Image 1: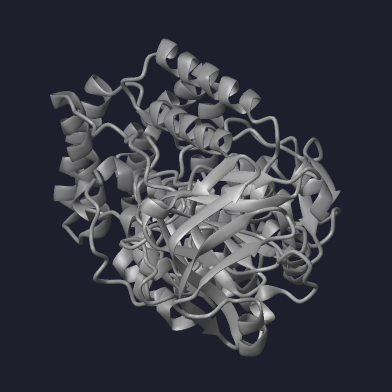
Image 2: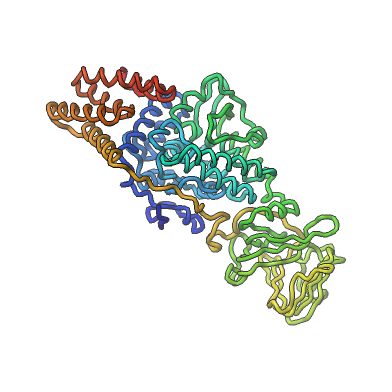
Length: 587
């Protein structure tokens, strides 16, 4: 699946998210894929019309989603643009922070693969049934889409950890092998064991992890209303034929929504959920995510937040009290005797910004090898350096082309020739030094031969968050797309012929032909299905539907239904799928 420039997007797609976008390649969907979509959507349309949130059915229509065939994402994108949203196609699981970032920009990222026929009831892998038919319809509700946008804005800034990302990769891999028809039981078992190892390695629950839990129990598996008679709005439930029915039964515990309960409750993507949370309304969810934001590093800053960022081997931003934003991979912190961070260092490309706008001349190309700077007050001063007037600077010996020595209250020493003093919004944010050395106790933090020293100015770190401050200028997100990709299917001649049978059945359903020719063709198809595809229950349901619509071949219809009875006895889940299909046909 190739990554593409999304020419069809009617909303602004940020540069740093474009690397996740892929081409839908609509022609790759097989007739069986469309039949799987149609089966699930017919079931959901029939059942969820009574049990889903009131926006569901109208939301399907306004999202450009048809029951009959897999949606074209370009058409969905155009439909969603009427409410200020858009849609793009992505390749399976992407990191949670990136997914949230799409939503912050009012873009619905849609995995364009579709589940296998064998996994028609549920798949752990995100697919177009889940992403399109699950997520899109409820966006029609204004309050709900406000919640999604707010969640995206907050979630895209959440700090994660190296262990989080390794867990994501393990989940992505397991979802891929479970959808791969060539995967053996041994391959799946090994992937499950690897996931278990990576899950156990996550000792500390990060912000991103807690928000992923909150997202799971709301956007993916949320119920709304009251616990006695809730309605479904979670995409995972709206896209699961089985769980959309079973989730409302008494054996699934219904718990009143609370922020704390959600972020403390982990989940297993491979199993039905044993409990679900019921919110009163979507305003309750907005209030909850805003409350959570107050606890995050983006709101509290300080040493603890910097330590969290250092555990995340991707781009983060530290914001000084002067307003200066330092975006890069936070690689090192220097602490004083009380454990307070007094100096920070980034490794690799780093950019400086104010108010999320990159400062001219301070992008990744200039700071390509990293950045380092002290944090804190000057020794003996109660006024922060960022607030110094020109007179105060001069009294301290901080003058252009003048050699000066600055001692910070922490003990950090900066000595060099002042080359510039940069103010933004009346605050000093940077001071540049030539022939500069920076030391702390017996550590050398910067040497004169390294070139010009750009010193950040700020009494304290007031905010820390994931990603760059100016994400467009930085042009890369917190995570890269995974190198793990799904295998393209390699169909046997028998499978290709099976697909052609599905195609012919669809054509007979949609095209107006003479009764005699339809009857003759159906007889031939029934004979071939019985001879070559004895295990295929879905094609039998589709043919029975045609026989009922045309009122022909009653004997063959009863024979196919008897075969469906036999297939149902072979597997309990398959039996339920067959019964659900027959119920829609009233047979």
